[in-house]
Image (cartoon, rainbow, N blue to C red; front, side, top):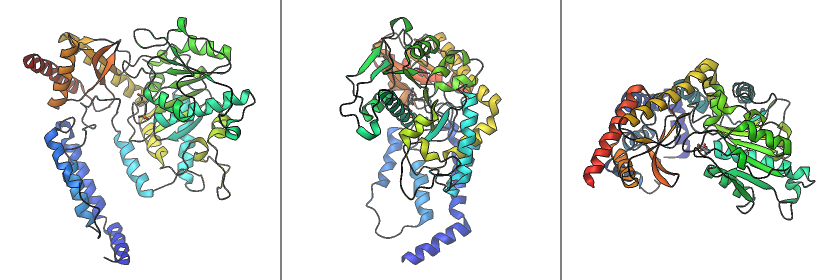
Length: 467
Ligand SMILES: *Cc1c(COP(=O)(O)O)cnc(C)c1O
């Protein structure tokens, strides 16, 4: 086919819309069956993935056939995250209104870099910033940058902290780099998320300058054993322990940091949303005294991927660190999204974020978070009744589960994963292998929890028989 023919064909695709109709049918079929799907594909299911192992075609392939191939090979090789029994990592679900808004935003193909590129996107970023700062109880005037996820948000927060702390000492990192710069003290909890370590390494802070703060049995930093802080310290706290979901005691920790003029960053990938729920709000008390916060909308809020936010109390500091210059850039009086993020071109994720927040309202966010917590507690109660050990205090959406012995835990987890009724990952908790359960989809029902606990018990019985 000639290039001009392709263009004609693509115009026809837009006029006739059969490709979008085709995908709409596939989506309907997916939502019809997702509740009955295996939580993750079996080994046998995954064999079909070999159809993708073809050389890149020389000529143009049929568009409808390409989508049909994707559907037929894809429908059993994805994780059923929309089904309510996927408890792996902290992956979240998807709000229908956010999905629909995203479809529209994708069709519009907007670039969120500059206001001049997409006034709508810039406006909705501004609205989401205002709404979220209020919803999460952050200081008035806090700036938000809309990024791909918490890893990037943390990177932004820590880079801003680094620049600000060094600038106080008269060292402009952006000008002079880190060679010969004063050393910044980094204090973080023993159970900080791996993305925090990654961010520290990316911004040139290194492992040797990190002081580990001891934690209690839930993984919370112990204020009585907090290492010394000073005006050159970056203290990194956690809202939502990566395994057990616990919250660092922000009030005493932030008060100390404030008194010492340290910079506090809070990794609240999924836990920051506790602040938007009456029942869990108390865990975040004092968190508003921090300087920067990172979170994901694609976890607890159930926005589609990828949707993360960096918040920074000092708007100017964030913009100073993220700002780029170029003669062709047109900064405006309105919000220019790229001033708050490392990326220039970005998709317009504020559109689906706005739609989800507007649909839920404060009441709906509260109910969403409370519902996850309630299901997590129910999960824990049923597991205990079946003789499993729940090792963490179930304060949020996370459970850390074990059987009678480490061997049995490992074998049971393997059987759970093979069974496919539900899916959970593993971790190590207080030197013991554990099953990690994250209840983070609005789709999860009491029945899903009951089915999953039954699957746990069956898996343990199979594991015992295998011994
Ligand atoms: C998921 C998670 C991250 C990383 O977030 P991404 O959106 O995957 O980049 C960081 N910290 C915690 C506590 C998390 O749960």
